[in-house]
Image (tube, rainbow, N blue to C red; front, top):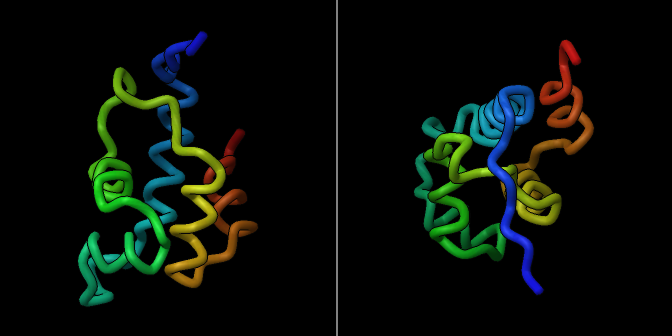
Length: 90
């Protein structure tokens, strides 16, 4: 039996928003597209596009660790730095 994801509460939504900011900070300056990043991360284009455009909490409970790790790796970002910034002030 598949359990649907619950929508994010305000705290979770703020944390996911900080995570997305960290994952995509400076992305506009890289001259690459979402499709390029998805290929480098070995993820589906739609997965990366949806996360990049950060839908509201009603559609999101947060990306999986593997999606975060794949995007971070493809962009040369440290998971430690992303985690630190994401949980800052918590």
